[in-house]
Image 1 (cartoon, rainbow, N blue to C red):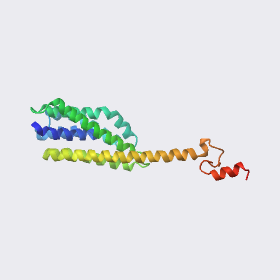
Image 2: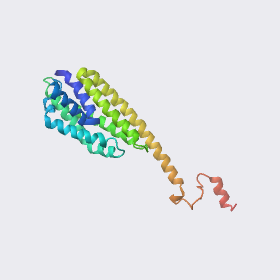
Image 3: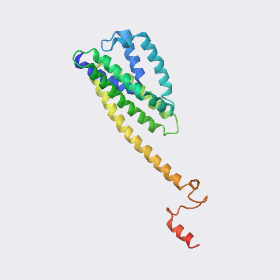
Length: 222
């Protein structure tokens, strides 16, 4: 495969960080039924396909439930990069020109970065009180993974370029969402410090720091 292996490693690594089981399932089915030369033979094994299908169904549901998705992401902080690295190794191992260890590292790093982006986005999305946003985001991620991996069979370099672009956009979105979460936390902390329940005074008492003129009147007995 030569240098042609690199875009496949980047694409599969990025996709693995979002939904590793979908990547293994799609690539495995392509090897099983179409004997694709671009997919390692090991992914087409029946036991691999069954395991990937079961885990994909589990993730499909867990990924759409608020806060359960974040817990699922925490568990997969190690799993997704490992799968990305394994795919990179298997793809690189088919190449005589590129080192399989380098491919494994590339796949693992790509998967880790996209996983961190996904986890960061979910942290921001979970601040929303309704569950619809989780379903929309999760479904969009699944469609993006399926679309980019499928495109890789037709044009690996184009798919890799799109994967890298989506990674950059994801990082930008995470930064925006984290700033939003930080602002919400600041507002909540400010509200809590002004609440009578915090012990800053008797119920109904005014905060003299925010109303200094009222505090002076109280001291004069007016």
